[in-house]
Length: 186
Image 1 (cartoon, one colour):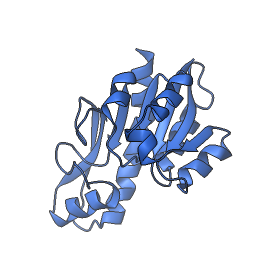
Image 2 (tube, helix red, strand yellow; image 1 turned 90 degrees about the vertical axis):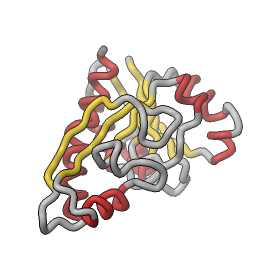
Image 3 (cartoon, one colour; image 1 turned 180 degrees about the vertical axis):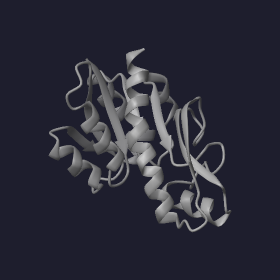
Image 4 (cartoon, helix red, strand yellow; image 1 turned 60 degrees about the vertical axis):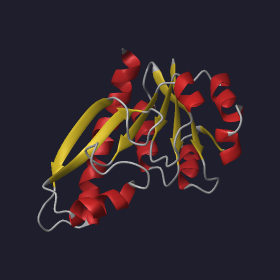
C-alpha cells in the first residue's frame, strides 16, 4: 500500500477530493492530513473521513526533525501539498517526493504570495486570455520544480476572480488525484 500525507493550510476542498478519490483504491491511500494551522478546516474534513490528522508549528517544521520523523514513522511514499502556503524545507523534499498544485499556468502568476484568490485577481486584472492549473514537483523555490501536468481554461471577458476560481477548481478536482495516482503507480 502506498501512503500519502497531505499538507494544507486552509479549508481543504482539494484534500477532501483526494481523500474521496483514494478512499477505495486497492493500492493507494491517504494516510494522514497535516496543517500549519491548528484551526484549519481541512483537519475537520480529515476527521470526517477517519483520516489521521494533526498540526505543527514553525519550529517543528523548520528548526527540528520532529515533523520529518513523524512522516518517516508513518511510511509515507508521497507528500501532497493541497493549498499549503509555507515553503517546504530541504530535508523534507529530500526525504519524500512532494507534489504541489498551483492555480495558474506557471511560471506566470507564481511565487511567494501568489496563491488562491490573489492569483485569480491578478489574472483577471491583467486581462489574460487563459489560465489553468500546474501540478509540479516541489523543490526549494516557491512554485518551481518539474511540471507534471498543466491544464488550461479560457478567461472570459466578463469573468470575475470568483467565476474564474470556480473553473480552476474544477480542473484541480479533475486532474490532481489522477496525477497523484499516475505518479505512485509508476
